[in-house]
Length: 190
Image (tube, rainbow, N blue to C red; front, side, top):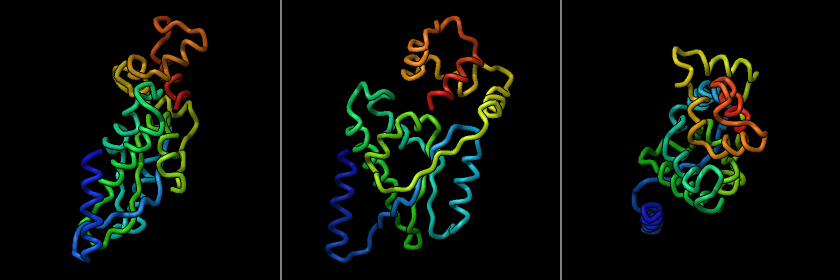
């Protein structure tokens, strides 16, 4: 928060004095996704459209940390607090010393979909898309590994409040569910 404020003040001073300094790229679009659905292709396409002028972050850690800073279920602070934190992080990541760069794009991690309202509050006019594909194909891709318990969609069973809420609401018992069922629940909560 303080770092973003200091950066904003510095950028304003540079602009007022007409000095050379970092510019702030315009956030042009964001990709939310289900996971294993072609979202990396979308991010690469955004870069390929104009590599000299576009900066694309693909599943970068700071935005998801900001979005989830108030908790996946906003139990630690409000949606507004999460949105403000996200604005600060995006601002810092949008600063550029390259005069050719003008546009900024993000592909957020799939878990960011659960807290999409923070993004929409922080950037209400920024275009975004949600990519998905046949859930059976996504699950097959997720679970195609030697140890299913290590699959991304299964790891949320011990950490996601939204997965826990879903399990409780639907009347399931956590210990009775197989890893494949956790994967399905994970995908259902995105």
